Length: 278
Ligand SMILES: [Cu+2]
Image 1 (cartoon, helix red, strand yellow):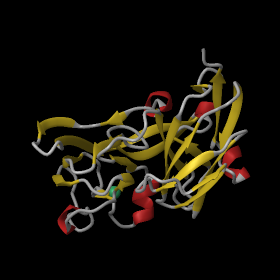
Image 2 (tube, rainbow, N blue to C red):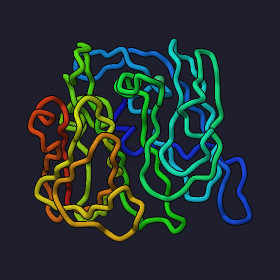
Image 3 (cartoon, protein in one colour):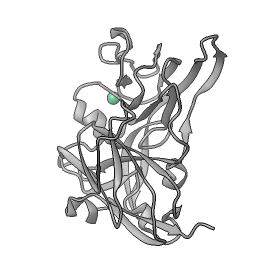
């Protein structure tokens, strides 16, 4: 897992057809596997992963695109992919359980635009989610949002001693990654930044994002283009998402972290390192 690359990597799938109405047919492949992953210095976790990482890849498309997501189950356990958003019942990834060695293709038109999720929906759900089978799913509006420096932040936790509580909290899979020298998130003053923020933390009801020395415009779930409020902290329930926009006025190093102090100290902290533009 390289949270540095993951931050701004969006999987647009393979465009196999451009349709007359301006939308595309996109094909994606997600493979579930059992894999040990590094979640904090020296700490490995026996995860269940989509395409090798926790979180899985950030899938991205535009409203109205026809998606064809082929899921292959190379894990020793049954799994599915449940997408959030509008789609037919048999594309909902609940009852069509995919056994070891099996596959299933989810095909539907992506709507509405906004920030969604995908995750396994096999019971017991909290086990299949806490083991790592989830990712963010961005459906762009027909008219793109304003150009910005875009990044995804998936908040999660890891129960490394299997006691039903998280010992580590992260954004994008590795505790305190963006806090380490050389791994800060580099920004420029005046640059518009857009964060796609999703909460996939299991066991704890809520998680949160707090920005230092700044405020952000909040677009809840990203399903509307008018801002909901201007704030410096947002709290998200399990599975909830928001789109955040901000820019830094002054150069310097600024913390961002969960505003639950416990989570911040157990790995959910990072630094925006802002340099003067021009
Ligand atoms: Cu599963």
